[in-house]
Image (cartoon, rainbow, N blue to C red; front, top):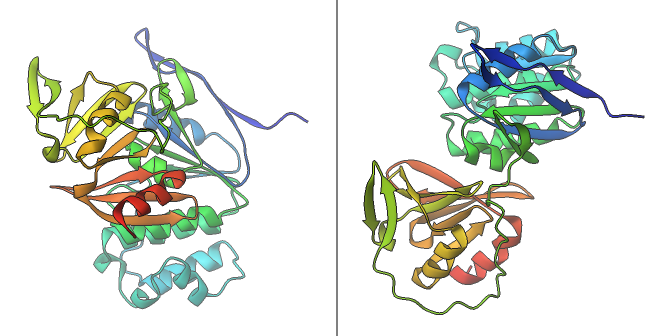
Length: 313
C-alpha cells in the first residue's frame, strides 16, 4: 500500500516561482519542520485550508479575551468531546495555577500554550502551525515541545523562518526554496569531525567576516556562536550575523583550542557564553547563550556526554 501524500500545486506570479509544487508524505506521530521565508509560509498555509482532516494554527489566532483560562479549557474540552478532566488539561499545559486569570491578563507565552491545547484535542490527523515558538519564553517552549510529542496520532507540520526553533522541536527539518522541498543539510555537506580528533593548537588573533563589502575582523572571545546552513557560514556577535568564507570544519580546527565546542553538525559555540543546557525531550537539547538577546542553539544528543566531560559536570 502506497503511503498517503499531500500534493500542493506550484504558485507562480508574473513568471516568478513563489512556491514550487510540493509533495509531502503523511507520517503518523511525526513532527516535520519546514524552514522557509514568509511568502512561502503564507502560500502553504492557504493551500492546507483545502486539505481534508487538517487543522491550521496561525500565529495571530485570537482567544476569547473575557473568559478565564479554566473557562477556555472547559470550552475546548466540550467542543472536542474530550474524556480528560479540565484539571488534567490545565496541568498538561502548565496553566493550573493560572486557571482563574482572564485571557486578556495572560502572558503571550501562556496564551500560546492555551492555543496549542486545541491542537492536542482536535481529532484532525494533520496539524499545521505557523511560527510555533516565536516570542515564547524558554519554559513555555519546553512545554510546547513536550505537548507536540504527546500528539502521537497526528502528523505535525511546523512552518518557520527560525531554524533553531525547528531543530529543537522537529523530528526532521526541511528547507523550502525555489528548487522545492528537501531535507536540510544544515552542515553544508561537511562530515562532522570525530570527538576524539586531535587538533594542533593555533594562536588566532582574528576571525575574518564580510559585510557590506567590508572585511570585519573579530577576536574569538567576541563570538557568541557560529552557524552553517547548506554551506553558508555565519558568525554571530552581539546578536548580529556576519558571513564568513571559512567552512565550519576550518573554524572548528582554529577555535577549539580557544574554548569553542562543536555542539551540533551545524553549530560551534563559545563555551564562555553558555549559560544553560536545556533538555526539551530525551533526544532534543539546546544551549542557552548569554548575549545581548535570548538565544539558544541546538545540542546534538551524541555531543552531550562530551560537553559534560569537557566542562566537568
